[in-house]
Image (cartoon, rainbow, N blue to C red; front, side, top):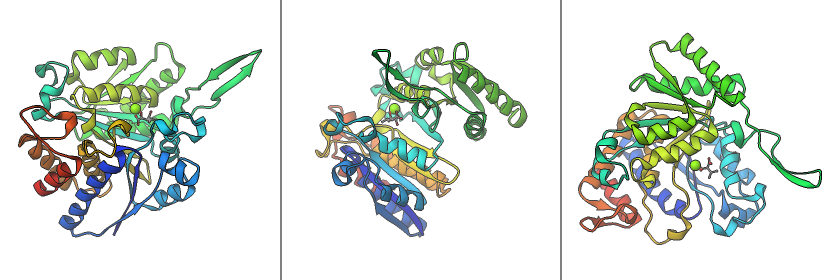
Length: 355
Ligand code: IPM
Ligand code: MG
């Protein structure tokens, strides 16, 4: 028995997650293994129901599960709330509470969607990048942080901080992943100016030399990396970087494929794992059946691969998505005049059938 905590969250998170659950139910049949789904609240919906974005029972149940499947959180209704009360705090709390220090974001190029990219087809065809983003350190969590009164004015403060063990464990994640791929890691930092980055680079070099001499490692400053991603994205295999840089670069990298609405992610720690689409809650289209469930479905595929070690079945889900796209079926976000338009649920069903 495999216990999955399902946190649909807000907006389109709810619609897309139910399609991912559909695929997981099918997977449980194929594997002949029982999955137990427990639905939990987090984000705006939890603020409405419990007065806080991450209720203790949600965190507790997530900690007790074998894997978490999350939709998206947030929406205009909750934007004006104070910092600790914002829906996004649910994400930060889950990441910290489950110690999900490694965020893995594959940049997947579907051949049939190549024209959706704003870059030339020859630049993006065959892209295969994975961003490995550190997820529980850096500016997002560093203290002191806040807005302070000081000498008659206010001062906003965030602190970027990394310890050696924090850098070591995420470096291991990136090198191990590269070992299963093209054996190349690009570590992205700002070591010409930031102390945290100088330590980052030193530690990544040490781990590389000691444990992964067979991997091809290079270092790139973050400003240059953001330029190189657009100039020649195919030079990248695994991109290893800290929390904030990874947040920014992963959005940039995802858009190379033309469709941030298609990309999954996995957030992994020693004991727990959480899977969620890279996209947000898209309140403007929520509840209309317009949302694309593919990112959520591919996140479920990552769950099968990483938490259940069912790599072959994960591949099958990926191929089912590919087959449906190749047959000309599209949700609204990736639609074009000559293609068949499907609702969120119809897309989920097609992919289930293809599987
Ligand atoms: C992401 C998102 C989150 C982040 C926000 C919603 C807190 O942008 O997962 O990339 O910045 O990490
Ligand atoms: Mg982001």
